[in-house]
Length: 239
Image (tube, rainbow, N blue to C red; front, top):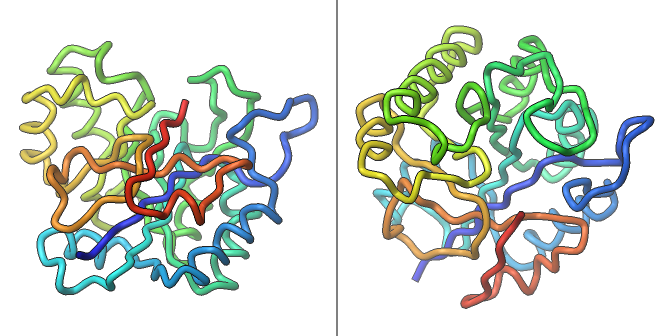
């Protein structure tokens, strides 16, 4: 049975001056070793188009499919992660909260870091990192009314497509919060043209997925044993 591992990263490299180490910072050497573990384990990273097609047509994907993602749009993805991705010839996806393009991560309690601006996002797209939606405001969906959730989905998609001239069909819930699988969220995703959506945390899954709007992702940190995490039955939850 075909299996998929969706890896979820945030930041690569050390904190900015004045910052502090947290679990979400992954040293470059660790990141490179994790990418190598995919290769050594026979996992084949695919791009966004192949991933989305494979959710409904599993026969088009390899037996062990990897899908590499980054949340929040940190500039370190472009500066530090991208050269490693290119050295392995691996495509990836970056989930961007559109209210913060060119700003910083003031939406969380992590050390403040620069996020990609539109020019940097365009460069990522040119270099095989598709940019998809992480909402507008990075607020948890469980704290929003259904109308607000729908607007987050619509406006972020429209902004990204207008600026980057590429389709936006994949969503990542901020903090992995899908409002308890609320029916209005699924209806808004489908009605706006999203083909799938990602949670945060969990293990690998088999194809076809039980629910394309609740895809599990491996939460990646500096201490993640990726070789173990890729084994069937492993489960982990990110913060």
